[in-house]
Length: 244
Image (cartoon, rainbow, N blue to C red; front, top):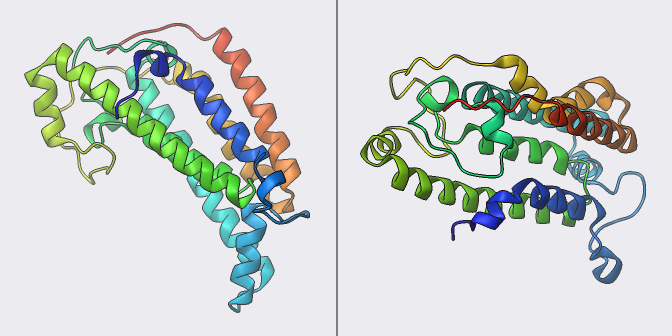
């Protein structure tokens, strides 16, 4: 069930492939699972379904826009908060790291804040996908993140031993606690590097905020693509800082 070392090393490429397939939904050409037209994405499909239940179409679009914006912002914050303490070099590296049990920042509340942030970001992006592509993406991202989590946890349990197992016993894997579950170890956050490393997810959130009110899925997608390009450039020049 856990990811292989190769799968872990190529995780960003695999994430990208899943997202691309979700947006393109190539299987629809054969099975005709999705509708066609300017509102054939999940955002439009759900809005029309909600309108049939009595809600105005404008209100339905706004409710879903608020949901997408909230998910995008939450995903960006969780990933940036986690990266600030874990270190951008560790987050962007292809290998696993385990120099000590990290009990600072979001890791006091949940063991995998970055993967949880990825899942929220995926929910926001899924609104812009055709329905079958969105279902495919959410399921595949969920499966991939769980495989990656299990691989990391097995590695850390072997590398760190009893201290890490004690940490796991106190802090939930994906369900955040309302209060810190462990004492802070004193690691200082590096916010600038974290923001640079997470520019893509912030770009998704900014796109929803800046142009979502125009109810134009193409415009939102353009914002997402620009965010991806900017983030790739920023990562190329991002310091390979490594902390915990």
